[in-house]
Image (cartoon, rainbow, N blue to C red):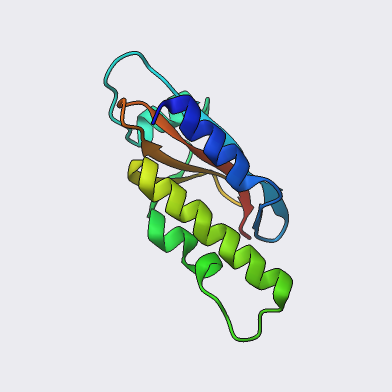
Length: 134
C-alpha cells in the first residue's frame, strides 16, 4: 500500500474521533517522507516537530497507549461502545499498515502526542494529538 493510501485510510479512521484527557483534542494525520533512510529517536522527533532539543519526551508502547480506549466496559452505553469499536478499527489499521509503532509524548502538562509507525517504503506515517496531563 502506498503512503498516500495509508494516509487516506487514517483520515477516514479518525473522522470524529478525539483523544480524551482533561480536554478533548482531535487527531491529525502525519506523513513524514525523508527521501532517505532515517531512524526515529527522541532527538529526531524533537527536530522534526520543531520542539526545543531539551523538551521532555517520553516513548510509550503503542498497545499501552491505546489500551484504555479499545477495552470494552460493561457500563458503556451504545455511543461509548461505538467509540471503542472505532478505536479498535484505528488500531487494527495502524498495526496492519505500519511497523515499529511508537508513541512519543513531547512536553509537560499540554503534551503533543505523536503516534508514528514506518510505512512499507521506509517513511513514517501516523497521528498527532494533544493530551492535557496535570
